[in-house]
Image 1 (spheres, rainbow, N blue to C red):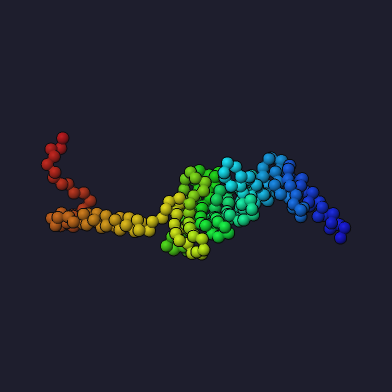
Image 2 (image 1 turned 120 degrees about the vertical axis):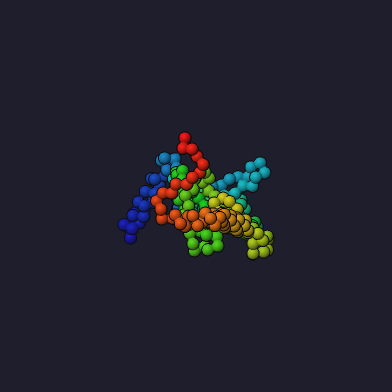
Length: 224
């Protein structure tokens, strides 16, 4: 038992040794660790006081090499939950939930892109068929893009009163997409008809000479 106790002490001391600065909770858990490279690591609780009319808040989550990672929760200074956000590479990724007086206010959906790359390959789900995915290569200009469903709520109503769908930062409009497809199909059909609609004499000429290697056609030129 004594050996186990000493082993636990060594583990705790080792975790402290990795931190240049840190805080301890009442349960002796390590918080707000800054390593010797001055990077935030592990679980943090960040408090922002009210300033110039802007409400203060307190948030908690995980830092990995100074970047927010995973799920973060935000509370007002009275302790009420006001947001649940998800991060990847310090950018919003996936579903984000926001609350007003403990009721859902709105929901966002984001896609984080690796900031170390100029281009990235991502899988995009088909809006009409969620089980179908398509790989897309995108240029990294914004490291977090609106992607997926955004929902808006009214107090006392659990069903969203408005829903928007985004695809790679662009608002998805099914009606416009359908109209574009119809216009493109009509254009292709018109072009095909234009190509097929040759005079009968030309069609007979093409058929008669289709197997010949080279056909010399008189066009009125003098050869100079």
